[in-house]
Image 1 (tube, rainbow, N blue to C red):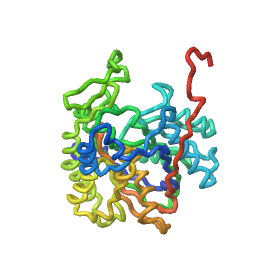
Image 2: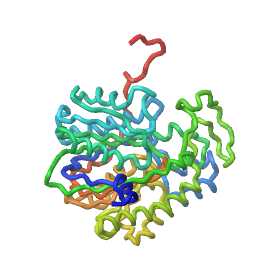
Image 3: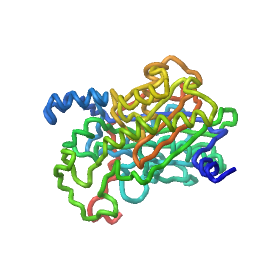
Image 4: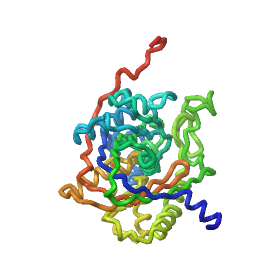
Length: 376
């Protein structure tokens, strides 16, 4: 094996004996229609964004509602619907870029709220668009290499809280969501295949410049940037042109490479579930894969781009639409791409009966607010 082959093998993997046994998604109750933004940006600009992105509405959390609240609601729905003993879940992985605090990891807050056992491994992963597939690989790998039987993958994001409401390029297309996925050991299921790519040299293409420890004294004042949008360094910036080019030129190439490596074609899958970046992007990827577009569900018309949660949310959307009366095993090709920049893909078989309908909630964790000067 040459050095190139060795490197390629490090970025792909196959997981045997792990099954997805539940997917649940929770949205805020607040639905914002794109046409409601006419007063903000003008009818012509709004209609242009709708036509370009395909987003007709998004769901936004209220001021006190965090990403973890949506993840908690999704997890409770999954656990109660499947009559799961939470003490049997011994790994909790939480993927988000909008955590409750800088520290501790929000996974521990969720561990407490869900009443989970002390015999549990918990941690956060800071990753966006490609995060669901990466999280699925991570938690499955932990199960395979431990005595743990069940794991809970929570993925939630509230991008509306880190986007300037005056930024017409982003504020209309990003929505909030929380999801929960239960995985467990089962030697009878088909193996899952994964592959990943990272492009760290492009880390500035999607970025919130402040809020961490690099730019501690950055101003929160919103001003006009070079692209004409009004934002501060604490708001999300995206180089739309470069991210668009990456998505329609490079992502299809990587997907094709994965299919070739695994000796299959897009025709071998019941559905190709892509990160919901932009409807035009999804259609271009489908065209380059020569895929039947009926196999590529598009949920962002209703929900917008929900970052790392868009793949499980699209699976729930698909269950409510095309496969709502079916309870059979389907083969899915899942692919996330974006922030980092990053790309991930997974070949997964699962029974659709484990995909639950989307729920809505306004609940939030009151005890999560820390009064100034609280001595705990």
